[in-house]
Image (tube, rainbow, N blue to C red; front, top):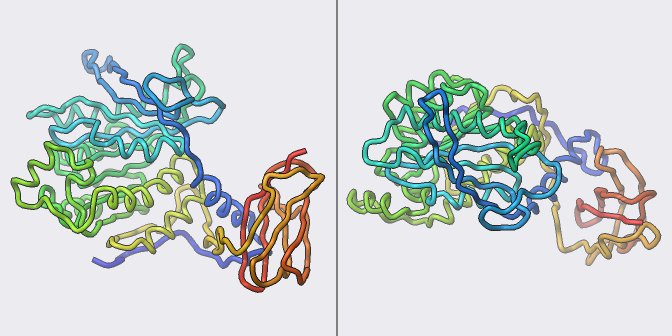
Length: 411
């Protein structure tokens, strides 16, 4: 399958410690900070009512950043607003099969909603698609609901996703709610009405996953959906060895169907598939739901270098207007020691190399402005300081490489 039609946003050279473009700073901070975020996962079961469909009740498993991990805990403290992701389950499956997805995304500042409707033997694809579309609208509106625990904390950004039947329904849902920012799905199945036909109308960024050893819904089905999407920025990831039920954490009902079809074994495990999936999915969502241009660079780097996948990629322009640079190397490296960190302004912070010597060290604030510069030191140890307390980024050019680190000074 190769990497056909793969294009991305304009790449520009990086000049390392010269930091000619402030976005370079942001790329590094994304790598250092966002990867370390680990918010506790809260969970509630909430029934939403759609008055436009005869007061249809939509029972939903609801996951969100909590003040602590657990059921019915309070929302995490602070003022951050969290984007919404609504995800549809597979045929005769339940939201419990996708706890891995909730755990992987909530800790990075997303709200996830999994409707449990249409889980029987005769599901209505149209109604399930409308459930997904309704929840995306309803949950984002809770930002303005003063009596709700999410009041003032929900971003007006959402994405739709799903697995198997739910994957096909996520494409249907995009036609019912055009305010959604992006769509993704796993091993999506054809639906009635047709998900393939719905794909021809989608004008939002799309990320489509499949497993190469899926005998329940062939990868060619997902590739057709990808090809049908007219939007100029879309991606297709086929995970080598991936099974249909891997995406549902080998749910018992799903796996029974695989076993009956004679395709229940693989060279990779479900956790391996999860890791590959999240490494691409999270920066995709970070980019489009949090308007994070730095995440676009990570997405590009990952999709270009991820092993054990084949990809299709078409992206002639970035709808957010991002211009992306390459992510610099040398993050982090044990050859450079920093201590103590954090430290006081008065005491400063020491940088020490295990080998080689420093050429120059620069300190930048979070806007990319150079705060201090130490040039041509010719030593393997240097003490640095900043004028005021805060978080900074250093770029140390040495005879053995270039290193980026975040440092913090307090009073």
